[in-house]
Length: 265
Image 1 (spheres, rainbow, N blue to C red):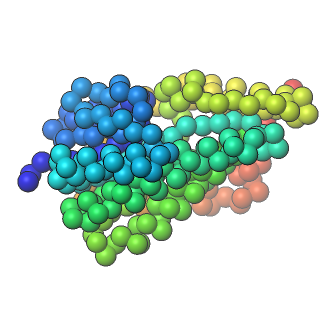
Image 2 (tube, rainbow, N blue to C red):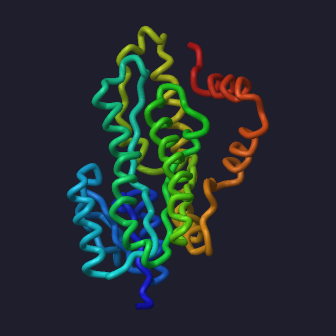
């Protein structure tokens, strides 16, 4: 079989939609795993609650039954919450990890038998916030840091099967992610308005961010290389930011992050 098959989670909107569209335009057989059926034309939508293990297992069983193979898994699905650590509900903390971390790990679990046969690739979509944790977005940042750790551990676990594993740490992007963020401003009076101001700065930056279509094209091109890099990012400014993070003292880095996001009235 010469047909190339890719599975993209969260393909119903934003960056996932753009990734799926880029692969479909290149003639790939694309499966989009998401709850909403709004995938690009030519993409096979599989209704999937990615936090439900049985649903994920069924999705990859369907891919095996219909396509017989899988060459690339792209774990893109994710969401964000904001608020102080102190006033975030435990259930919201767990829900953030369910979507951003455990859903990706579950997809890997059920995709691996197919990817072993094809010597395929796994690309996890992470965030620059994984290495530059953002105040009042602690659980989003932590979930993406956990995803980075999963990526790097999995890279060595699967090396013997000639499976290439990598992650892309994205920066700001102009998508529906901003509007969908679950914002919790409880305790903002105690924090002297810092929660609200921090999130406002973040959202302003996001709406001036990269075009999702461009990101989708770049991620598709990255996946078509012979092998994936362990962790990378997209955009010259973010590449520079990650590079500087390896050189500058941590105290200076987090002082600057604080100046950016914890603005005083």
